[in-house]
Length: 83
Image (spheres, helix red, strand yellow):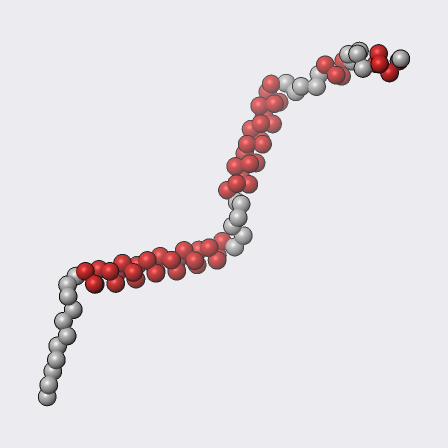
């Protein structure tokens, strides 16, 4: 019977389970900053490899645009020479 009554009483420690609003705000801010940092650095392990892939992609896109521009600039004519 003593076990049942012990859960009904309130100790001074139990009433102060919630941190102060300022402490809670600080903890929430720290958690938000930690989540932001982790999400920014997620997935990219080798930055040099990513940069190389971007450079290759840009060069390929540039070559495609140059080829398209050359094809649209006018019809190519072949010149026959006979000696």
